[in-house]
Length: 175
Image (cartoon, rainbow, N blue to C red; front, side, top):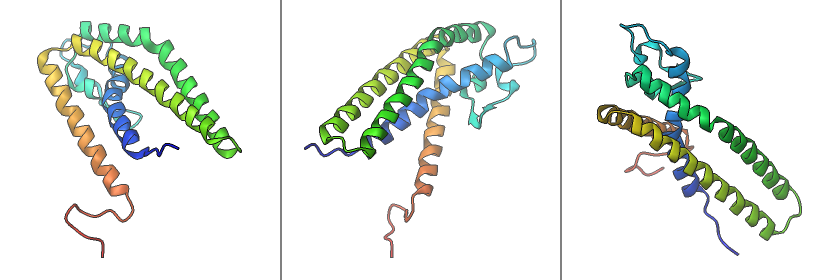
């Protein structure tokens, strides 16, 4: 029987999703808040939070043309994203049903593999969307977005580290 260590792949996938979702979460806010900026107003001046998540694209001073192009990319992908969310919810429910039943280990493993394969498809679609949006950004905007994303990852790691019970600093021993 395979011995699955889920923690490392889940953490890696979570970090990748956090980076990629920064763009996915940010774009609707920029578009909703700033579809037609005034001549003296930039996207970063229209607000930088939605649902508690910071909005990295709002800090990039997107032009109206960039905002329109990004909105078009997101609009094309929206139906697929919604369908994927429903499918992953269904797969997770199926997994919970298997885990709480007398299902054989091979059935649970097969469902796990199905979920992982589907998550990989979703990640690939997110990356494709990210690359399309990236192509719209200037080199300076890409650099700034990269720095914002790195700061978000660092903050996420810091928060995750502080949530662990019995967590210690790297060179301390728990006495």
